[in-house]
Each structure stands twice: as structure tokens, then as C-alpha cells.
Image (cartoon, rainbow, N blue to C red; front, top):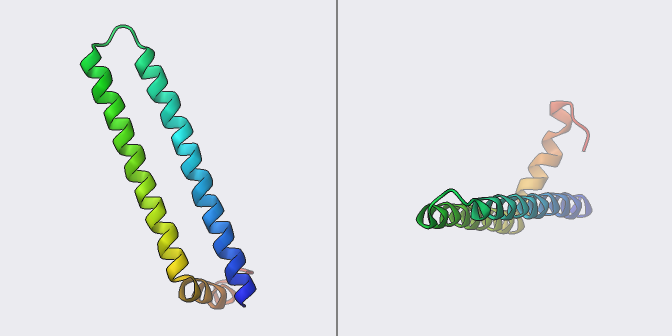
Length: 92
């Protein structure tokens, strides 16, 4: 069972990190496009870029906290998932 728990945690952590990387790629692209707009005022650019950075940092902090929570409680969380999966008709 410990091997299954480690595998499930690895998969979850990998998905979280991948989604976080994708989020930052999208944010950097959008912030680059916004910064390249010539018809908006510099103050508007600063507000838009600041909002993007705040959103990215907030999401990053939340996902890092999620990984930490999963790591600290993986035995309880994944054991419950493994034991309840057959009752729900899923195979784990």
C-alpha cells in the first residue's frame, strides 16, 4: 500500500507543478501582450501587470500549500482514497 501512496502522491505533485508552470507561461504571455500595447497609458500597464503578478503569486502560494498539505497528510488521504475506490466502482 505504501508504494501506491507514493505513486499517487508523485502523480498529484507532478500535475500540480505542471499546471503551475502552465499558469506562469500563460501569465507571462498575457503580460507581454499587455506591455506591448501602445494605446494604453503607462499607469494602466502597471496596474494590469501588477494584477497579473498578484494573481500568479497567489496561485503559486496556494498550490505550494496544497503540495505541503498532501505531503504531510498523504497516508491518511491516499489510504482513504485507495480503500473507498472499490466501493465507488473505481479501480485504483
